[in-house]
Image (tube, rainbow, N blue to C red):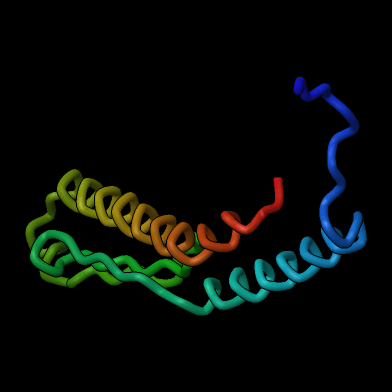
Length: 110
C-alpha cells in the first residue's frame, strides 16, 4: 500500500491550544526576564583592583576601583582592567540569561 501525501495534520486542540501555549510561554518569559533584571554577577580583575557588577539583563549596575590604582598613575593599565572586567561581566550576564531563558525557548512549538 502506497501512502499519498494528504493535508497536514492539525495539532491536537486546534489553533486555540497552540495560542494558549504561546501565551503561557510569553508570560513565563516575561517573568524570567523580570527575575534576570534583579539578579547580578560580579567580576573582579587585577587582584580585586577593579570590580564590575551587571544585572542579568546586561546592565552595568556598579563599578568599584580600589584607590591604590591611582597611586601608580598608570592610566593605560586602569583602562585595560576596566575593559577586561566589563567584557567578562557582560559575558557572565549573557550566560546567566541563556541558562534561565534557554529552557523556555526550547518549549516553542515551532
